[in-house]
Length: 123
Length: 107
Image (cartoon, rainbow over all chains, first blue to last red; front, side, top):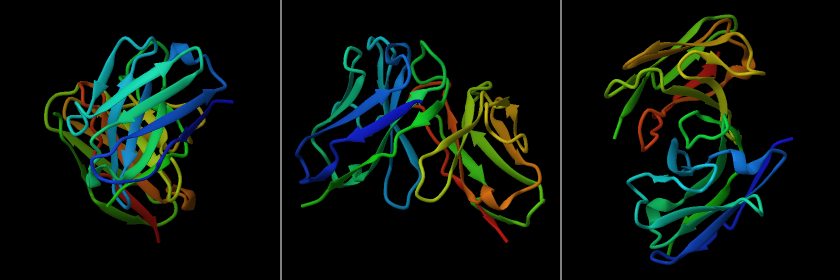
């Protein structure tokens, strides 16, 4: 069955960096775009970034553009989110979520989600 | 950036009642609108994609309609397990924004 497992969250000081990972299994990873979506404590969902199935296309929310970098390693069926210059407002549960259809880049909605990894930015 | 608004913010319904949630987009997004359900302490679940396309495994009491700037999620015959927050998301253009959510409670 499809599984997405996030890791790498933790407590970090403002301005520091963190790298999240999402390990995928149960499907042909290289055929699907993958998204990062976050949710601040007690708040709604915020789309963060997406990478296309082949890694060629990457899109970001304005709030993270220039600070976060999404990448994927299809040989290891793993997605990453490199987060630099972290701010308190980046505190959230970060989900990775698979596109609901193959060969897309976020346009088709996300049908499988991980359980999330919590990032806390605080001094 | 396309802004989505949802109404109401909160809705309380009784079992078997019909519930309607509206999502409005700040510009024309065609049918590029998806609906999600998120229960407390769970990850979101895709309910409807492209405004009205059903998703395998989702109960048939959930349906979607609309196009352009106004969309509706309908829950026919509300059940206790439908207590959740419902979000719309536009995927017409980057960034793929979400609506603020509508919390549905069961009386």
